[in-house]
Image 1 (cartoon, protein in one colour):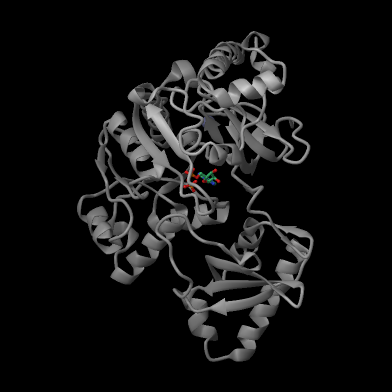
Image 2 (cartoon, protein in one colour):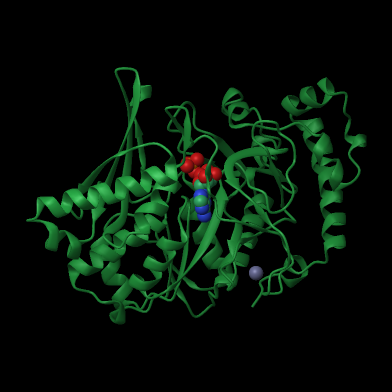
Length: 435
Ligand code: ADP
Ligand code: ZN
């Protein structure tokens, strides 16, 4: 089923025409309402009249996270405060958080996009759906919540925390769908094991997972352990929140709501546009937003736009999984290292749980990388008393890491359950060099 076939199955020509029309309007709007953009366009000798088709987007300036910080809190807001009905903020672990205001129309579009996503996952009115993203300033909780209500399923606003009580509800209410981070889904699976709840006792069949990067290995594991089908849900607060893109039944790339968010892929260093299929930095222009419209916002997320059409019948362009973040990239001894590379190695070995931590340090002017990995219970139990076997396993992992990363890492195997759990986005890297 498709929530909005008119938009999700538009012909390419119609979509480009619609995008062009909306782009002209948004450029005109920010030119007159956001001094930041007017100044930028004037400095480039551009007026709104120069933007005619969607192709002209390449002439527009980029917007960065730093621009949002420099204009904290409301500098990029285009709508008057009286029109803003909701304010979210990104976590902002470094520097000022990013403040995003939404008008009534923005919230309506967000609900629509979230309803498209849930419908693509197969969520129906008869479903009971638990939203286990954090509620609050983070867009995950309320964003998903509004979407479930829009579809007409029953929403259970479980949020994070209270995992045992939540699992009891999942079992007793026959909850059929869940939205949370993929790492929290695995934490639920672990807690289920501890409580002695088996997957036959629960009715979960659909999972909407996002807010942090995950891999096909994690998908397989979550699907196996929770007995559901796991779909990707992508978004970011600057552009809207969850459901900027979503997977369909094909589980092959996430369809972008491109009638509202126009995607481009650029080379993060030279800024040149890259063709479909090539990996680079994802850039979005909001085509319909009123509260805080953004032109060519650089997400720092690395992925590719997928060429070709999807078998599900939707014509909207798909993006690959997020392969890393241009700002998450660690440079260790001059070599680029992504946490996702470590994850793919860890998950390719059956001895390990998908729990790992990279600790980077600088000792005597030399960068060091330590990779801590949790063992799976059954392997831990059988190796526990044989230091030689543990040693051999550490060496095996270190060798595999070296072949993928091109630098050596010190491996430390950990007992099951000893790497700290997060209920929201997980922490995968501790870089002590910055301290
Ligand atoms: P915060 O800034 O508080 O962390 P955001 O919701 O704005 O909260 O975070 C958005 C970021 O989360 C994205 O830019 C991306 O890096 C990551 N993200 C969100 N969904 C996914 C997903 N499905 N896969 C990979 N990364 C994701
Ligand atoms: Zn599809």
